Length: 610
Image (cartoon, rainbow, N blue to C red):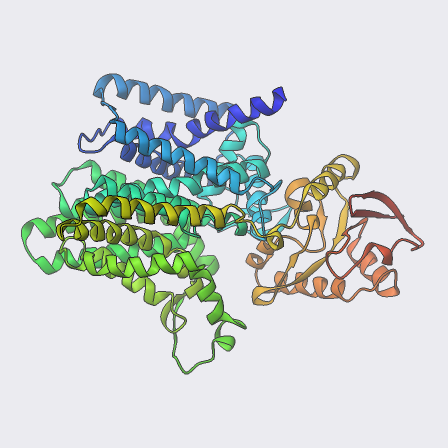
């Protein structure tokens, strides 16, 4: 019990160190009197993620390997800079009662996210194993690695902002990589609502509208809560940063020019690129629209603002240019403009039932209601000249979620569909406030408040009830029984052990694990016949080799000649099976000569090859 309480206390302490200290050490030197403490908190969090990502990039570029002592010294330096800035600049952080309420609501979103994953012992679904593996590799390397050997013989050119933050969170809190991914992932998921609040204020300067949008994101919308069921932790990190950098860009357009704006935009832009490539593309798209609107005005002030904005964006591109070059050199062949026309069959372009899948991603029913409200909000926002760019950006994103038209591969319409919640919740909040104002103007002021509160109460109860079980059983690969078996493997098998595990065909011609066997490599470092789906980043030859092996395993029926041939060729030492999962069942090996059942608990069976 005492150990549990101690680890629970380490969560907020580690979060403050990783998500607050670096950003505050910088932002305290550029105090903004026009921003309330909640907006400052949002930017501090975003800058912490950005600075962490850029520092990680420096370890890769300069081949640095940071030890625990190095990290302690760097964070001590950040603490000293923050303290010095606090003394020299003396920023004030007075919170009104309403702002205290907003801050309390944000912490409730964090608690709600943890409640939603209450039954998980490991992060869910097929992306999570490779996220944990990357965090493990970063912790062992002491920086951003060039490859994932010895676990996977593939180069590393993935966005790593979340993984680096999770590795630091694990270091300070003494968490395992899996614990750090699961815990930090929920904190950042909740932080999206904080960033949306910041963007809402940049759009309208109306605290109530911005707060309502944040609440819709936190408690009503299906996304981003459902990201926990997919393990979309890198996208979560990108969506924490995206509203912040859009807010800064809008303020450059609207307000007086401040020199620190370039620095902050450059850092946020750099962090965005290193956190998630799709969110970086979405901001560049927004930046293009905003820049063109400034050029269209064709006056000195707008051109000056356009140049300031461009300097900030290109500063971020310059800071991350070594990584951009690496990604382009490794995966540039997959980046191209693709056009699909309505006459083409979606089943051939994407996969079977793709149209229904897109509708599913925009749902369920309460989400369709948000889409309708957002449509009304879109009409409202187009009436305001200063907000039309955001409305146009949202409209074009909606078109990008359609299965036809032009798109930038490898991004697909479903990738756009799952991030639409961000502008939709902002526009829905705007529409609700506009409807309340309309009722008041019609002389229904005495009815507007109770009707509005009743409607919002019903909407939030609906969202809370349906998202209380956001994790679907089919997305949980490992339960407590699997976790116990994985601990047993860690303690009772050699580092060189090689495991046969069950798999099943997955998207785009790959295979995925179906049970705790998918977690053997990320948690224990042991080799498995089917690695995490990240193996697809290793090139066609390596991916084809893994696919051939997975296909052979799927055709096995038990202790046959085909099995022993496969075992000899791959040096197998163990078999990991879970009753009821996969094509291979434990009964097929129980009476097999040459195998010994060394573990049989709660439906998990591990055989050793003698």
